[in-house]
Structures are given as C-alpha cells and as structure tokens.
Image (cartoon, rainbow, N blue to C red; front, top):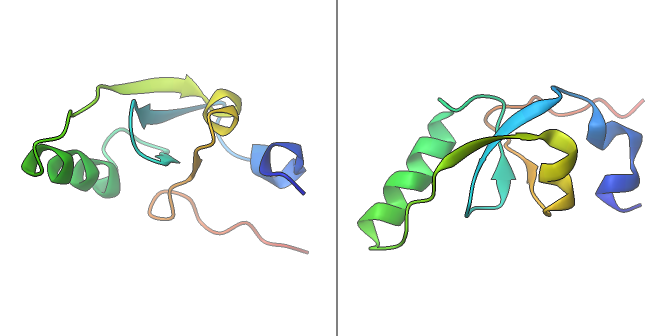
Length: 77
C-alpha cells in the first residue's frame, strides 16, 4: 500500500520539519540527523537548504519518509 494511503503514515504531529533537499521529515528542527545532513551537504559544497515547518501530510506527498532518529517505529498490530 502506498505510504500516503496507509493510515499509519499519518500518525504523528500535524507539522514536521524538512529542508528543501533530503529524503526525510523530522519531528524537531533540532534533530541530530537533520543537522548532520546539513553539515554533510555544506562540506560537499552542495546547497544547504532552509529548514521549514510543513504539514506532515505535505511532507508525505513530497515523497519524504519519517526520520528514524526522530520517530519511533510504528507498531504493526
């Protein structure tokens, strides 16, 4: 089932944090994985994108996945 159709994909906060690049969304703008990604991009000479607060539904529509450092795995009962 596509992530955006799965009811479990929408569990969590209404708004999350994401940069213009990357593949994940985060529960907090202070996520170490988000900071590390920004640092790595900068060190590689890539554009460091601004971190934005976006609706989680929008982040999922953009193809982003939950950050494994921010979000606990969802229990599959």
